[in-house]
Length: 279
Image (tube, rainbow, N blue to C red; front, side, top):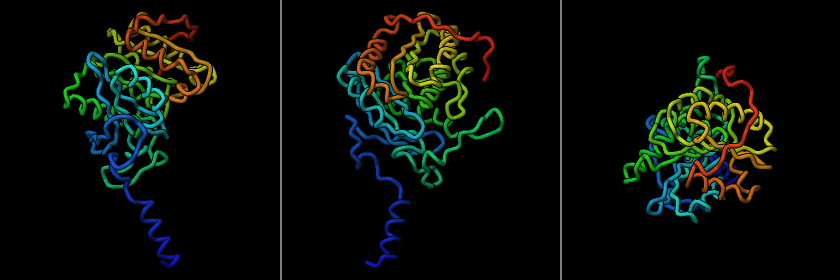
């Protein structure tokens, strides 16, 4: 084969859509499934059914990541009998073919402030979470047993999804931020006002951004869902899903909270005056 032809074949392969999830080994235990978001995005995910009496957790990764980043936590979920669905969010992992047929990577996604007239593909990932829960519902998993957990920007998506879906039994946010990928979070947390939805926030001392911004968001969470339903964990190292790798007891502590959100006592946190914050 000539060098020119070899180059043409290589370029064609690089531009082709990724094969279905069932044809690729993700390393995650469970069934490879395909979801369809309301705006047409085809999304790839892995689902493992929960044991009787256990919950299911929809796992939403951070920007530039993929569902496999949840593997350390997934292993703990499986050992505990919890179900999960880890999703490759639009533009990430295997979910890179847009409704128009264009192959989009995370680098091509827009992350602009919608309030200022911009467009934000990360805000639209709320539809990805809805697609995951909808898929589970069609297979008999009750909505009130499906919690959401997200890391960094995925955590913002999890909060925004749960803010408008009151049946969500719990929300876990790893490395929260006031505006990951220009997703403003304060108003979303405020939207929980009057509900008793348990919210767990986790950040590390090594993550300077979340260390600064999480206390403020946590203050709003306590004000919205009540102090008994808001919890905070602080660990020494890393950020997002990588915290499970560097902090060996974290997965067990998160699982213990999921089993009984009120068993984890919220620490006293010094924060700026919450009333002065805005999106």
